[in-house]
Image (cartoon, rainbow, N blue to C red; front, side):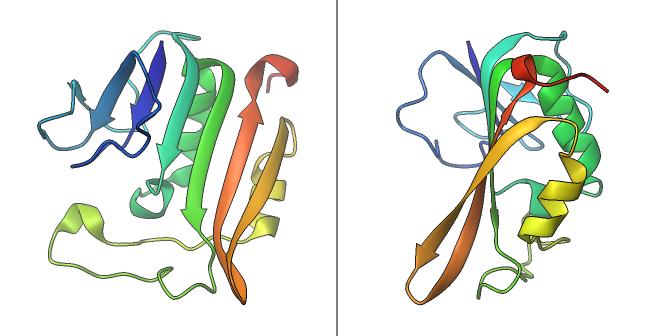
Length: 143
C-alpha cells in the first residue's frame, strides 16, 4: 500500500497504485483529510510514501518528514522546488497554496543526516528547478 500525501486536486503520480490519498482539504481523489505533519496512520503502515510539492506549504517541514518516515517501511519520495528556481516563492489566494519555505541541498543534508537517502537535482536548462529526495527508513538508523 502507498501513501500520496498532499494529493490536492490531481493525482500527481499516475503510476501510484493502491494508494491512500491524503490532503488538508477534501477533493474528488482524497481518501483521508489530514495534515502531513500529524499523519493519522500506524507506524510502518505504507511501503512507499510520496510527498510531492507539499513541504514548501507546511508550517514545520521537519515534522512532516519525520511523520512520513514513521509511517513508511521502504521509501519516502519527496519533491520540492529549488530555492533559486522561479517557482520557489509563490503567493496565491488559496491559503493552502502559498509557499512558506524554499529549499536547497544543504537543508536536506542537515535534516536527514541520520538517514540513508539520496537526492536528485531536476534541471530545466540552464538551472536547477526541483530537488527530488528518496529516503530509505528501513536502511537507516532510527533516531
